[in-house]
Image (cartoon, rainbow, N blue to C red; front, side, top):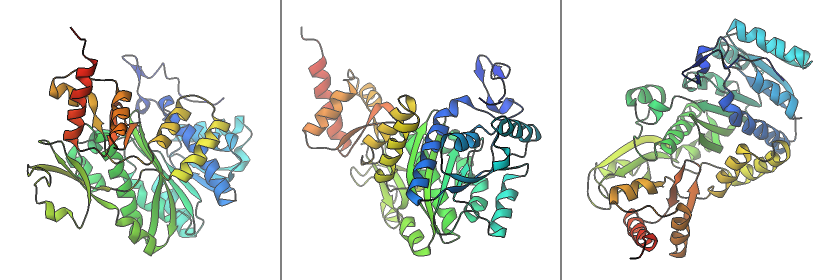
Length: 389
């Protein structure tokens, strides 16, 4: 139980708009909070210690409250929001659960708060950046406020129009990247977010390694294990590169920064003109071992439901090739009936290709099959499913 804005009061045309409420609270982010509870518990057990945690944009405080109530991994917590109404609500929520004495509740600008702890050397094991919009303005101060030996950074981005290519200039300003507008834009958005966080951290010789990341609803979310280690930061930076996409042959590839100038605007497969996006993260989106432990904790703490379903799907595709094909879109363009997605996955595997369903889209497949081979397969499967006369 906790105090939060009444979602019915701030609804417009039947939809609740969190930014309209006097205190930010988004019930649709419950899965985000569920996963973070499990990540905190997992990281605490992995580190073998209770954690010093900071939630610099806490809204009504429900996220921080859940950390305290649902895990045994918190040693101390700083809960902050610059909004006076939010600050008051946080205090009431912590008082109601008799936790006020165990938390430091602040009303400051998020960057000012984080910078003050960094300058004092009073740093955090885990910082959860969950702003309304982009986390980019808060990354520098958050990274400087992380403990040097080992820490966890959690970031959410809800500004999907820039990240997904509808507002490319905004994406370039905020993240220093050119976005991709197309069928797999949500994965590219996530990879841009990850690359930006890694690049910001590297300025401080701080290495951020993504261990869990996903797209859900109207946000992308990434979790990083961090350490102050310049050589490790260099190694991680090598996995930042670019996307090249050919609209003619449907080829899509992630390439390193060194290879990028050699493309010169031409598809290496068909010679057609290509679109590019990036810089973006070209490495794996999940640390399979860490994710397995999070799934185990989720079964214990959250139980069955959408959160466990998401985590299980992330685990199932942890070793999938990057990027994905929208099967419905491919069939629509080819003017053929769309076969069942599971049938496509099985057929690809029978032919020796890697093939996975993906959490990014229920009608898409991740595979290492060349796009033209995939299209031929779709035609075969479509005719197999077509009624015989």
